[in-house]
Image (cartoon, helix red, strand yellow):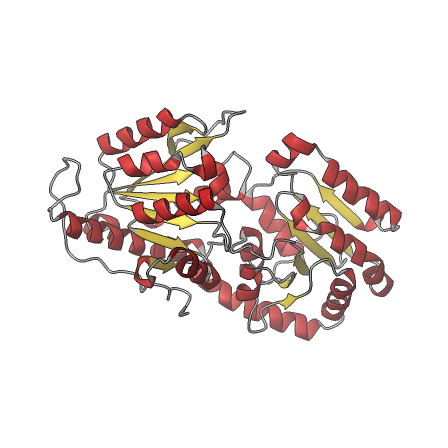
Length: 421
C-alpha cells in the first residue's frame, strides 16, 4: 500500500506547539494530533518541536526532537535552521498568542520567516477585537502560512472579517476526539454506584464558571438527592503560579456554605486519556459553564459531545455551533437557576436524554482522531503543492532529492464540517 504522505511528495512533517507532559490544552492537542498522524501514516516521518516555558523543562517522549526556549528569540531561529537542514516538507504550527515569546507571541514569526517549507497554521484563538500588537502578529502569521486551519465556522468568519483572509486559504477541520464506548457506564469503578453523575473536566481557572454549577446543586439535589458533581482537573499552571489554589478554595468554600460539599468531588489532577475516558463514560450530563463568550474552540466540549454525552453549556461561540440541532442545551452565563432547570429536566427524561446523546454521538463520528488526521493530511498536501507551484520548482527550497508533484487530493475550504461560511 502506498502511503498518502509519500505519494504526494511529503516525507517529513513537523508540528510546532506545546506538548505533554506540559499541562495545557494545546499540549494535549499537539500530542494527540501528531500521534494520530503517525498511526494513520506510518511511513511519514513525523516529529514535534516543543515550546518550553521559562520556569520548567519537561521529560518529553521521543517524538519531541527539538525544544525552544519560549523567551529566547535566537532559539526560534536555531530551530528553523534545524528544520531546513533536516529537509522538512511541511510545518504544522499550533498558534496561541500565549505560548510563544515576545509581544503577542511574535517570536514565532522569526521561525516562520526562516522556515524553507510550506506552513499550515492551526488557530486556537481568533480575537474579534485584537489590540494593535495582536492584530499585527496575527496578520503576519497568516501571511507566512500557506493554509490556515480553524475548528469552527465562527472562527472562519472572524478570520475573514477581522483579517480579510480569503476563504480559499482556510480549512475547517474539527477538534479531534478519542473514541469512547457509547453504552459504557463505569460508575462502580469510580465508586459512584448508580448515582446520577454530572461532570466538568479541564484545567481550572476563574473563567470556567464552575461556581454556577455549585450554586445550582441545591435545587438539583432537591429533586435527585443522590446526584454527584465531579470537577476533574488540576488548576491551570499559569493561574497556580500567580494565585495558587485560591479559585479551587473559593469553590470548595461555596459548596460548604450551600450545604452541598458532600455531593461534589474535586479531583485535583491532570488525568491521562485512559482515565479521562472512564470519567466520561460514567457521566450522565456534561457541563461547560464557561464565561468567555468569544471562545472559538474547546477540547473538553468536543470530547464530551463526541463521547455521546448529554451536554449543557453556556453559549460561547464554539458551544453554539457544536450543540446546534438538538445536540445539547445552552443556558445563560452565571445562571444557576437555568442550570438547575435543565439538569433536572434531563435527569427526569431518560428518553429525551438518550435521544440527545445519540445525536451528539452521530455528529462525533466526524471528529475522531483518525478522521481528523486524514483531513490535516489533505491540508498538508494542498499546502505542499501550492508552495511547490508558486516556487516554480520540482522540489521545495531546500536541496532535497526528487519529489512527486502529482496534484494531491485536497480539502474543500470551509467544508470539512459540511458547512459554508
